[in-house]
Amino acid sequence: MQKIIGLVGYVNKTEYIINLAKVLSIMGKSVLVIDATKEERLRYSIPAFNNSEKEYLVHFDAVDYALGFRSIESIKEYICKKTSNADNYDTILIDIDNVKAYEDFRQENFSKTFFFIEYLNISMAKNEELLKVISSYEAVDRKPVLTRVIFKQYVTRASEKYFENKILDYPVEWNENTYELPYMDQDKIADIEFEQSGFIDMNRHTKQYTALVTDMAADIVGDMQAGEIRRMIKMYTRGKM
Image 1: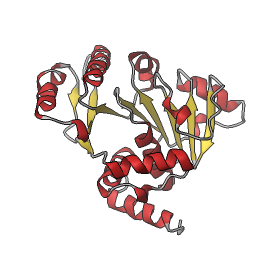
Image 2: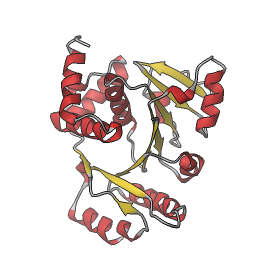
Image 3: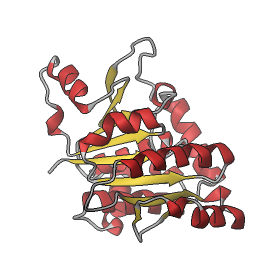
């Protein structure tokens, strides 16, 4: 069954999503990443993109990436012109950082929604805007269920109080499972190296970062343990897959 994953939040999570998509492809999943961010960050991260086109889909390192589209249906129409079918993807990851994009894609009935948080003033303000919209579309019989992903380098006591005192007031249900992204200097360097070389190497990241990516991949897929996925990554990088 196809899984559509909402990766929501005013956070620069482009490189993280690229790494997540790569891991899912190593697991044998066909993956489409949709960049619905306001700044369309993928244009500057994926070397195969032609920056001049408004709507564009490119295949890079076993994953399809889409820019400039406002719905999955419009992507299907684009792909059908190339004699393919968007329904063939096992997993669709949608990067959303603004209210307009959420409204465009919310009707896709996300299998899971991960809400990314970093505790900078602009991020907190923009994320509150997103939460207002998300909660306004809540179903009569149930609240939206969100899984929190925290960019850990910015966490302080004040930021934790902010989450408890303000964010928790919104009528959404927070999943008990919380992810913490320990984005260390080594991880930043690994992502810079990818942007410059065009080669994704998960082994360049810290163990903590890789553990988060594989834990989330296991959560998305649902039929494989994170430890097994990490073994698959090692085999892949050694050329045994």
